[in-house]
Amino acid sequence: MRTDVLIIGAGATGTGLARDLALRGVSCVVVETGDVNSGASGGNHGLLHSGGRYVSNDTEAARECREEGALIKRLAPQCVEDCGGLFVAVAGDDERFVADYPGWCAAAGIEVCCLEPAEARAMEPVLSPKVIAAFAVPDATIDPFRLALENMAHAHALTGCTLLRRTRVTGMDVDAGRVVRVHTVNTVSGEAGTIEAAQVVSATGAWAGRVAALAGAHIPMLCSQGTLLVTHERMTRRVVNRLRPPGNGDILVPGGTVSILGTTSVTVDDPDRARPTVAEADENLRQALPMIPSLAYTRFVRAYCGVRPLISAGGGDGRAVSRGFMLYDHTDAGLSNFCSVTGGKLTTFRLMAEKTADLVCARLGVTAPCRTRTEPLPAAPACRWTEPGFAPRLWAQRHDADDPLLCECEMVPASAVDSIMNDCGQQFPDPGLQALGKRSRIGKGSCQGAFCGVRVAAHLYDTGHYTSPRGLARMREFFTERFKGQRPILWGPQLIQAELAEALHCGLLGLELGDPEAAPAAGKDEEARS
Image: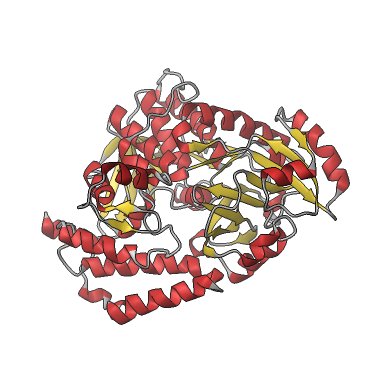
């Protein structure tokens, strides 16, 4: 395969770069080991930072967040809920920090409004009666999955940009200071391949050091795992931050119908082995209780984690490392057509993509300017199903008695699954439940896929997308992935839910007895059907 630019990594930055280059007329191929947002882009709060979190320790990152957050609100409003945010201090917090906060915000250009504690509690009744100070800031939330999917959809529409899912880069051939060939392997079928590109870009987040090493380059990475917890229901209208230096359990972010509590910071050696832990779940909860006491008896339905790709040669505490990003041109390694972009935040993905595209275009001799700073991101119909409440609204409007709900928690009907399958036919030929879940609300409710996983698989059999034991294998993969996120929060109602799910999946379907050798690999099954 040949292309102008090969982008490794389909997170927010990689997909954003594909769109930026496409707007300049440059075609790309994007390869991703898993699926879109498999790394930190899918393992975060979904917070669109105002910058208020970083004003005390990283003014430059705070300014970048303010500027980029405002741009995204204006240019991609379909991905954003402009809910606003609060920073609150409780009795016992550092009052000097509280007093300095408005000045720090002013220095970073961030709009801030001082509130009386009673006023803040009236706005968010779950706040502790011990709140002593509160400030309103222009925080918002963003759907990172819709963002990445729409970036890819726009890039594909402009230049035919292709996403190769489940494609891992295994090596690079370097000759005369250039990456002349990139070796890949399909992680499902095991089929090896090669891609030749005029320019190669790594946008692989926490894996940037490993990918750079394949070409003989070096990036000093520090990988910081952050674990987050998902509540059963939405607890606040706004983002609520603890008014203190960044720490564990200091933010509760609304995410559609739920809230997300986080996050920890644990340095890890291997991002592939990142898993949310019981200790991190307990720590998040312990730290957040003084701010929101009702969390003590709130039902949590899931935990998950992401790995922050931080730049630090000295190792140590990830909290102390800048959230700014770095673009490496790798000329110090004698390379002229390979670069890496890493660090940064979800909020600053567009800026990261712009700076990277500037470098790539300069190397290609392309003079077209960046347009992502001014051009709105088109809303793609195929990407709308990740929006909370969209599927049930459409379902209710249709009044179609023959359109059953497959996911009752998030009210996703069969027609939504059919629409995703039809709209994504070329880029999404493999109907795995995990992939459907990333492109919809399936499996995100309180049952965590216990019921909808079975129903969706049955629907895919009924509609001919599954014709072999592969459906059972796909259900097993889906339930295994969902359970990884439930293990750290198995207490109270979620423990009862997990016991029920085990009874269904093992007692009814016998999924614990499945022999992987008996089910053909997905890729081979696709080949057989074609």
